[in-house]
Length: 321
Image (cartoon, rainbow, N blue to C red):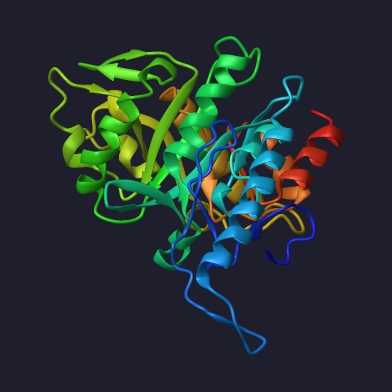
C-alpha cells in the first residue's frame, strides 16, 4: 500500500494494477482485478495464474481484517463531523463510522452501469463501489443498531458528488437508491418522508430531472449555494442542504483574529440557511482546531475534514462557550 503522507489518519491507496475490486466490509463480495500483465519478476518467468493465487490469498486476509474491525456500537457520534473524500481512506465508510462521523462524501463516476468512487478518472481504478462500500454498509449498520446508523441520531448524511453527466448518472442512480428505500429519506410530490439516511446530490446536480416531480418519489435531495436560496425557480422541497465554497465567503483561514466584518457576514449567511430549515457546510475550508472551533461556535452543521482522528480529538477537548 502507498501512504498518502497524512500522519494523522489511515488514508491509503492500493497499487492500481493489483487492487481488490468491489469488496464489502459486511458481505463477502469481492473480486480481483483482471489487469495482471507482468510475467517476469527478477528475471524469472512467472505464470499470471500464480500471481492471481497470491493476490486471492491477500484479498482473503484483507476481507477478514475488515470483518474483524466492524464499527463499534458505542462510538460517540460527531454530529457535525463530515468525512471529506471518504473513499480515499484505507477503510472507506468504516473509518468514518468508527470515529462517529454523521456525514460522509463520495465522488462517483458511472462506468458500465456501476458507480465507482474517486476524485478523478484515474482514481476509479481503485474500484471502490458506491453500492458495496456505502449503501450496503449503511444498511447493515442500521440493522445492527435497530433502525439508525447511531443510537440517538435520527439522520446520517451521505453526499454523492456526481463528477460527470448528471442527468445520465441520475437515470442509473435513482433506481439504485430505490433498492435501499427502506433506509433512505424520500420525497413524493413535495412531501418529505424521514429515514435514517439522507442522500444529498452535490457536484454536477441533475436539476432537470428534479424539475418534473409529479408522481415520482425521489430518494435524494440536492444541495444549493447561498444564491440559490433566493431563486424562485428552485422549489424548496428539492433542497437538502446549503453547500458553499468557503473562499467565496471569507478569506480567514483560522490564523490570527477573525476579521469582524467577515464574521458578521458569515453569521448572517448561517442564519439565512437555518432560516430555510437547511443544514450547512463549506467546502474548500481550512482544517485546523482554531477554524473548527469558530465554526462550531457559529453553528455550522457539517465541518469538513480529511483528518478523522484529529477531529475526534478536537471534539474530546472542545469546550462550548
